[in-house]
Image (cartoon, rainbow, N blue to C red; front, side):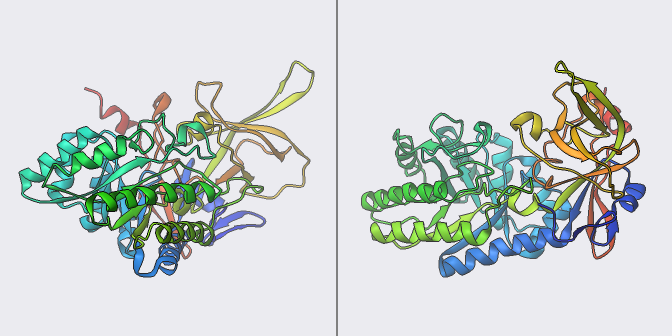
Length: 435
C-alpha cells in the first residue's frame, strides 16, 4: 500500500524526508514519487517474467497511461524495459525520455492518421491494431515510408473480469479489439494478410484493470492460444508473440490484497505452457503491460486540511467533514469508479478518539469525495497534513483543471533528496490558453 521507503512514526516520512518538510518546500497538494520503489517494482516484474519464461520471455511494457513524464521515461530507459503508449502525447514523452522506439508499443482504439504516421516514421516497434480501419491506415502509412510494420491484433476473449465495469475491457460489448467468439478476430487476420506492408506478429489481450485473481488471465491465455493453433493450422506457420496485457491489482486499503508478480506470472506460465503443449505449439514470446502495479504504490499524495465541520444527519447523528486542498481534480477515481482509499495524519501523532469522518475536496460538487467513510482522529484541525497512499496510478494522469484549479506537481524522492519532475501548474498556465 505504501512505498518501501515510507515510515509512519511520530510523523510520516518518505526516503528520510518528513511530510512537514515536503509540504513546506513544495506546498500542497503534492504527489510524492519514491524513485527507488518505482525502479525496484519495474525490475521485479521484468526479472519474474524472464525467470518464468526463459527464452520465451518477451517484453515488459510499462503502461504509460498509469503515469508518465519525461523523467519517469528516463527511468524506464535505464531499467531496460519497454513502454506501452496510446496517444501521440504519450509517444512524445517516451521519445523525449530517450526510450528506444523499438521498445515502444503503440495502443489505442482510435489512433489518428497523424499519430500513426508519427509512430511509423520514428520506428515504433509494435502497433496494436484495434479495428479494420486501422489495418488500412497502418498499412498505407507503412507503405508510404517503405517499411514493413510489425503489428499485433487486439482481441477480446469474452471474459467478465472481476473489476469495475468501466475498467473491464475483455467482454464482448466493449469498444476495444476484435471479438474471438463472433468471428471478428478471424476476419481481421484475413484482412491483415491482404497487405504486404504490415506483418502480423501475434495477438494481444487486455482484460481489465485492478484484477486480483489469476483465473481471468489464465482463461485469456487459453483462448488466445487456441486461436494461435487455428492460425497455425490454416497458414502453416506459428505466430511468435502473445501479449497478455496488464491490469494486475494493488492494495489501496490495509485489508486489500495485491497480485504479486510471482503469483501472476506463475499462473500465466502454467496456463501458457499447458495450452501450448495441448495444441502442440511452441511457447511464443510472452509480453505483459504492468502500469498500476509499478507506479501505484510508489506514489502518495500529501494534502493540507482546510476546514473541519460536523454535519447533523436526519437520524440525529453527526458526520465529521474534513476538507483538503485537493479533491476530484487530482483524484477522480473515487467519483468515477467508487474507488476506495485510506489516509493518515501525516504531520504528527494523535491520541484523540477516532471518529467516523468523510474526507472531501474543495470543488463545487457534492460528489467531490475522496474517502466516503474513514476513522480519523477527533482533533484533526486546519493546517494538519493528511497523506493518501497508492495514488501513482491515474491520479496525476487523470487530473483536470476543474474549477480552474492548477494541477499539483510531482516530486521524486531518493536517498533523502527531493526534486520536482513535473512542476505545479499556475494560474498563468491556465490563462495562457485563452485567446
